[in-house]
Every structure is written in structure tokens, then in C-alpha cells.
Length: 88
Image (cartoon, rainbow, N blue to C red; front, side, top):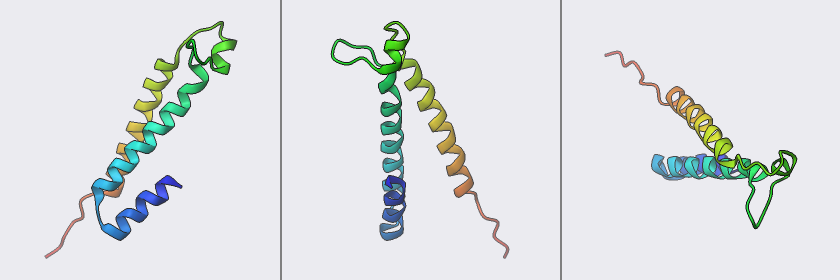
């Protein structure tokens, strides 16, 4: 749903920077949500952290998922914004 809103913003305003910021916010939200099961703090302990004998690996999962999402988004962006050959 957020991706659709980002693309609608470009369609209406033609502002590519709005999409870049929206995509960054989407990636950030996905990474944070992916870390929740692995968090082990005094306030909250995730389900998977409990099953792994109180191991806190949220920072590892967050780093790996952020890298993967970044690479995927760069590949998608490069496909979408390929230079076009112009014949004169």
C-alpha cells in the first residue's frame, strides 16, 4: 500500500525525490519489523530470542536485511531508469 502511495505521488507531482524518500521509509520500516522477533532487552524480548536462550541478534538480522533490501531496490531502480537510445 505504501508503494502504491509513493508511485501515486510521482504520477501526480512528478517529484522523484518524494519516491526516493518514501522508498527509504518503507525499507526502514521493513527492517525494524524484521528485527522485532530477535530483540532481547530489559523492556521486550522477542519470540525467537527466547527460543535461542536469550540471544540478541537483532542487529545482525537488521544489517543483513537492510543490505538485501538496498541491493534489491538498486536493481529495480536501474531497470526502471535505463537510458534510452535516441535516434536522430
